[in-house]
Length: 223
Image 1 (tube, rainbow, N blue to C red):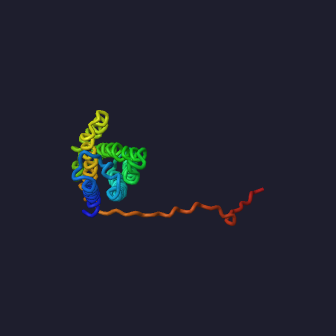
Image 2: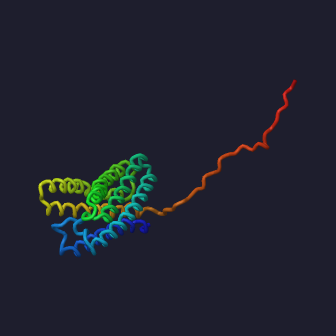
Image 3: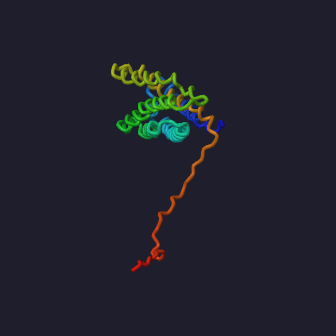
């Protein structure tokens, strides 16, 4: 069923097009400025916030679906739960980056960037481990395994080039890292297209047993 597969595809398209619009409003091109720099001032800061807020909502939804899918495949519960937590933290980081621009609240913005980028990379490495530990499923080898080394390379390059003062190259790596994250989330569509149905059920807790005093029995002892 392709209905649920459209969810990660929507995230990939939404994030990529949104970042492109923000960059075009700030400058004719992506470089040499960082994504956060392009989204610091209005009107592009308003679009930047909306793009990341909607993206964070979609990440939460995708992370929950992925958690349930791996659970249905018989994946390890602890590692799967850790992956869900990392996905939710990644979504929180994206929301912080979008709502706390670097010109207004730099510390919060950098903390959000750490959650969105670094925790996001760790999330996909956890998904790589889960992919190899669950039983074979159709399409599961297409979850961007070739892009994960690129993510680690980009993450290291950002910090290394920042230290060397090469801002243009670091900005290029940060753009690549952000767009690659969108791509990796989009590749979940390969597995999500095999989801036939998904429903949320609320089960009322059964009432606790009570002791009825009137139902107590008596017993006569023989003399």
